[in-house]
Length: 103
Image (cartoon, rainbow, N blue to C red; front, side):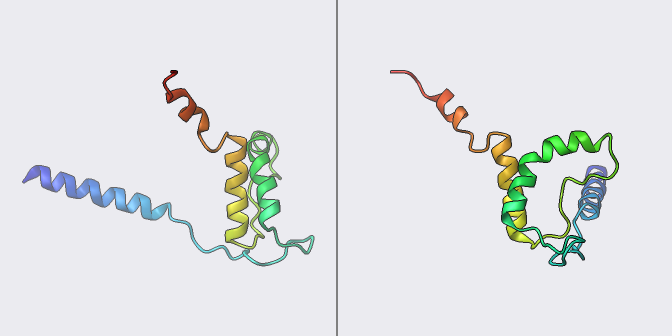
């Protein structure tokens, strides 16, 4: 009985924590920035590729962001994730090559 109550409390806490981390709607999505532009796939790709460098610099400067809020939605996000994957090695083909047994 006690273990089921403890399990229930843990599950409720985890659900609340995960629900608190859920993203909300982006009010800037699809709206132009001060440069009168909306970021798309190609800018997302570039910003995803340079994101690790920009993150390090943003630790020392307050006026840098690593994600463009004035974007077109899914295409920008796809480019951003693809840029990050390109930077960090992406496909995992090194792991597949390492597992092959030499003949």
